Image 1 (cartoon, one colour):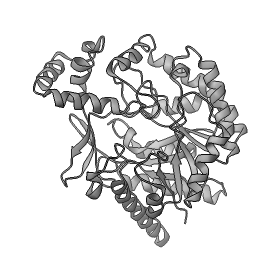
Image 2 (cartoon, rainbow, N blue to C red):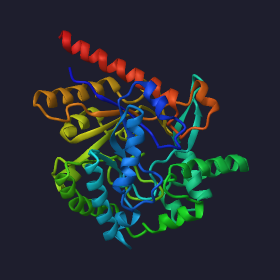
Image 3 (cartoon, one colour):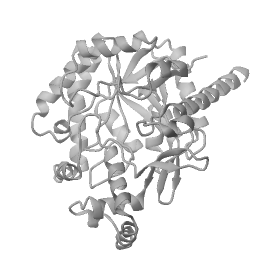
Image 4 (cartoon, rainbow, N blue to C red):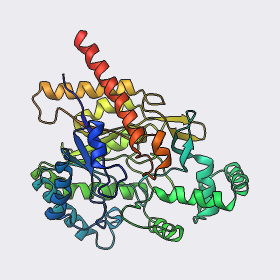
Length: 396
């Protein structure tokens, strides 16, 4: 039997969930990054080994980097982008020299992820993340006051958003702003609404085709270095996988991944398969996508969402719009194929992505989506699902 490599995201020494907590969760591998370093600079071997030692001292393995941020200048191909690409190459080499060979990254302009509510009350009283189109529209048009925002919505959408925003207190408006900004790369940079608007304006002349071309050019430079160092690059899909704030999105659909893999056909140009991100588009067939791209899936995020007419919210791992059993089955099939072909990466790193804030964690300060108990519940459910499928396959 071939099993998934159970992993857990750790934000470093400042993470409210400690390494000793994670050790008790029973995972073997850590997903981490040097969040304290500014975007674009070289990750030195000294800094990497310092983080690696702290993880290994806790009896765990740092096997996946999430993420090595791509500087905005690289996405726009402006400013010092050439130097930032060279720095990225050196970071790849340094990570590989430290035996860390799976590198997750994304190519989302300005925003890493976007939710309108970070504490949506679930039916069981736990709290989760959600995206509501009405609240997003109200923020974009009336609080952010983005230039040209009105052109992106129908008159009825704007009218409904105006009614919605007028009913909010000043405190509720401030909370909505805080929620929207929380998805910006806050671990690396500090944003205000005005700074956010200025960053958005830097993309006014960059189309979807431009951004896709810039991504391919970036990959054509770094993937040869990744190949030389046996470093598996795995891009994370857009979250959510559709345009926000007028920004282009180029890693949202099966066709986007197909195009990217065709342009840079190396095995080391791979994918982080995030079920929660891809599922936020109704036209994405996750099971078909997993099967098609399986040989180049180097890392997996298992998260479920519940789609509804006005958006989506993050549900329990086994109850939502994602058929998690079907995805787990295909994940097992791919790991089994790799094992039968004697491939070294037959066990794919998988982490429970996000979890509800629940039980004792309701009284704690946590990173949005990354409280301990909710993820532990999700991990336990995913373990049981994997074991059940493996047992079924053994008997069949």
